[in-house]
Length: 120
Image 1 (cartoon, helix red, strand yellow):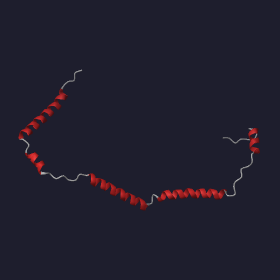
Image 2 (image 1 turned 180 degrees about the vertical axis):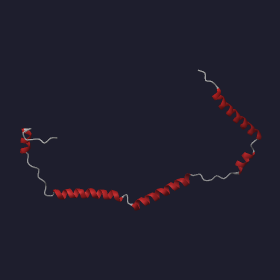
Image 3 (image 1 turned 60 degrees about the horizontal axis):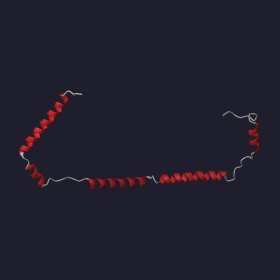
Image 4 (image 1 turned 90 degrees about the vertical axis):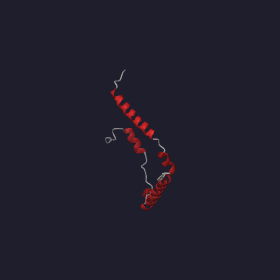
């Protein structure tokens, strides 16, 4: 904004000339410094939550919690029981032939799909 000259707007300058000048309180500087110190104290309070000692303790607690969660939810190694071994021993050799035939059928079907010409 350009500097305004008194001749530009006489009415405005007349109104501004009748207003009393603002006066500052004698305690203005003290009040400003108090506000600045209070702001700094709040910052220090927040910063104290993130001290190294507290962060190390919180991360240790978090690590223990994660370890406990993994240990309790991990099923661990499963030992083969005798009933599992019996099931494998009882498989009929004829079942192997059926599975082999099934594998051939699946392979033939996959190849056959690509050889067919689509009809619309």
